[in-house]
Image 1 (cartoon, rainbow, N blue to C red):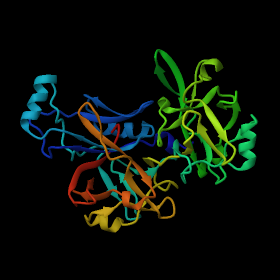
Image 2: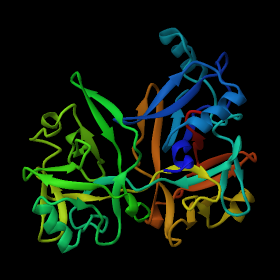
Image 3: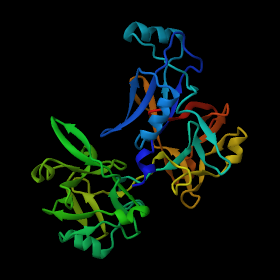
Image 4: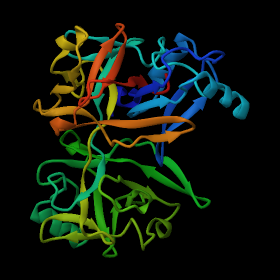
Length: 373
């Protein structure tokens, strides 16, 4: 893993319903943190100067691009927040400069963080997820690989199309469930990681074990739905890791070369959409916009990409329904190949990247924002 991968961080799209500063509001930062349950918005009451922000930019880990807003439409709303919580809901407007919402447009089609101009928007690796069986994104293994896996042999997991299934990093994360702490490493899959493909073995006609790591393939929270992630999870010993009856139970489908959860044979292992992150300028995964000229002129453009990929990718919302945490609403952002799902953006005040509703042309009051300023 390169230094860029270690220091890349999540951009966020943020919005407050009130474009003007609320009376008496204090300077507070809203960060997006990724834990075992996904992105969580965290309220941090401390203030950070520009040097502190630069340090955070350098030290932050992978982060997701999300859309966030804070509801505070009237002064009475803010006063109600003071009366009930001691804090105003409207802490700062959508267009808050001096941090993670400040962007530079480059003539080469890239978008740089204004306070760390050597970092530009890019795409992360494809996460391993569940997909509908038969989907074009399902993993299909060749006959030799699938038969070897079914027989319990040691297998390097590379799909027939050349995608290598590997670890996002070597650093284990920890998740505590019912007073038991599990070791977790996120799983990724793309053609760039074939050299890092893991060695696995199918054991007890049930578990897909990562060799020498005491970790098993595990469906996140044992929720069987398309799009849910599948990661490598382990306990303190093999007996704990081999917990049957849920998201670690797998069936090898020799007939079509796929792998399915035993409890959901209509699903299969597959590749998810990459998230938007920051990478070093010049990195192979940096994004290049198709219409940077239009964006520079202040026009509203479709966020289609000329690279990475073959010019068929667009920036998009991961889902339409907003998630919420402590008064903040957010939507994660991804890249995909469905053109009609592209978000529309406009560059404002020589600083902000605002979303615009593609159907109505109205501003969405959402801007790109770097998590953990």
